[in-house]
Length: 193
Image 1: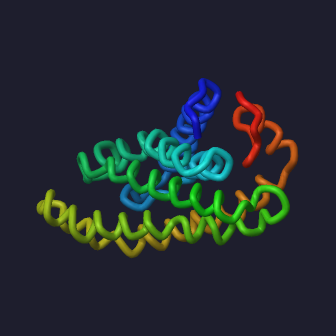
Image 2: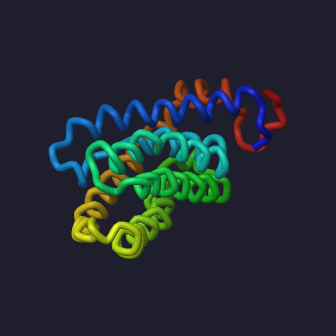
């Protein structure tokens, strides 16, 4: 993806939307270490339409508010809270590569459900690594947070399943695709923006 002003604006806009979705879904949660978070929807949109690097960059941006929330406001991860941004970037880059390889946009939007699920595996491994290795090693006084790994991953797989179904429906909608194509040309297009 060549960095044109439109593409940069698209990534920044999707990243900002991710932070808004994080605020709407995370903040009302009662259990602060395990909060619903649908901020990855814009990451997935950027990955599917913009490719792996747009997905990764959007993931880094969209993970900003969740990183601060889980690190300092509602959680106890401190600077490890920023592992949330890394995880979202991993999800974005993986979904972007899978979408480029399988090309689900035009006629096979049902493929987005498994693409989103499979694309979550690297982030899932990253979350497990953060909670089972980095938390006990870097913040031993918060090692008890490792006990939250199973509920966090169960909640995450639920969210990713919902987002996969949502993406399959959303990407199949021609009006939505036309809106996105105003920022990013379709796969294989030689149109310059």
